[in-house]
Amino acid sequence: MYNRLSQSRKTLTDEFINGVNFFIQQAKQLPSFISEGKFRCPCSKHKNLVHLEPDDVTVDLYRRGFMPRYWYWTSHGEYEPLFDYQCGPSTSSNVAEAEKHPSKS
Image (tube, rainbow, N blue to C red):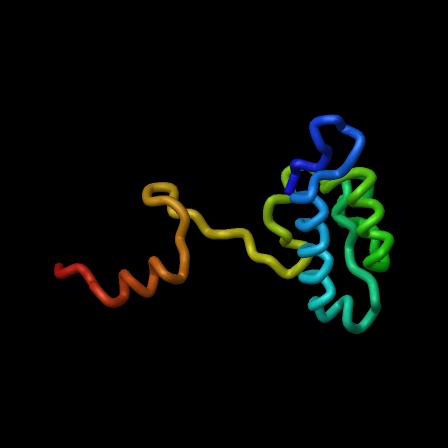
């Protein structure tokens, strides 16, 4: 989703446009948006500090792109994954699998 500009650098990539559209649809599900009609703008200028309407967030993201390193939408309802630094990412499927086969002590 950070692949914003085409090789000619004159147009936005389809990947970026689709990613922004997906982001906007996800953010519209937030309780804060449902009650206020606005959500935090994660563009490189506003950095989640300003609440805007979806159309304004879309324009800002098209013009400026996402703020650096906003890989997990933590200000928009997404949780950053937990990592077991010895084994890698921890997912619910890994936990469920481990519970099925407990180690014998």
